[in-house]
Amino acid sequence: MRKKKYLYIVIIALFLLSVLFVATMPDVKRLKKENPKKTAMMEYREAEWAARGMKRRPYQILVPYSSIAPYMVKAVLIAEDDNFWSHEGFDYQAMEKAMEKNIKARKFKAGGSTISQQLAKNLYLSPRKNPIRKLREAAITWRLERELSKKRILEIYLNVAEWG
Image (cartoon, rainbow, N blue to C red; front, side, top):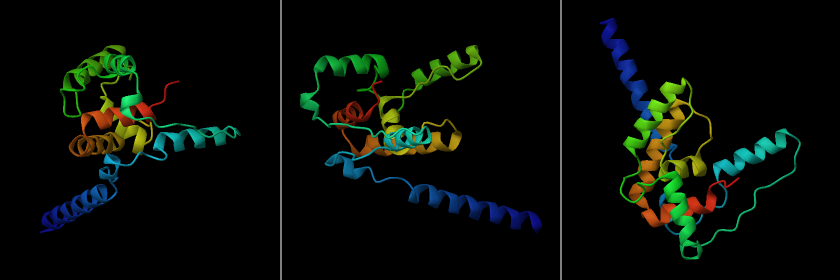
């Protein structure tokens, strides 16, 4: 009887955590027509600068895809995600290669994130590496890929990614 009680408690807890997880997911549909005002990465950088006593703010000018140089698009795709147009948000081969490199180096040296995953992180998450953040990143990536066109994902990414 006691085992059943604990099982019910675990099931209810998992259900509540799932509901909380889904309820805290950002609404990516608005990105179809709206550009992001400020990203989580910008907020992270502002907090980082403030902690150092620096009074800086990120500055950006968003440009439409048609105004981005085609060579810039090609260079980013080759460097960051050469399977961008063909995958659905996740490049399992790149993830496998990254994992092999990390195991060989015995530390997190390489990442297998796609542009869609990087966009999810930049828009809504912190750069910290932990399993919960990676789960949220996967869920947001899945939603981005379902709601936005590849061209729109790339347009937003090229406008919000940190370029050094």
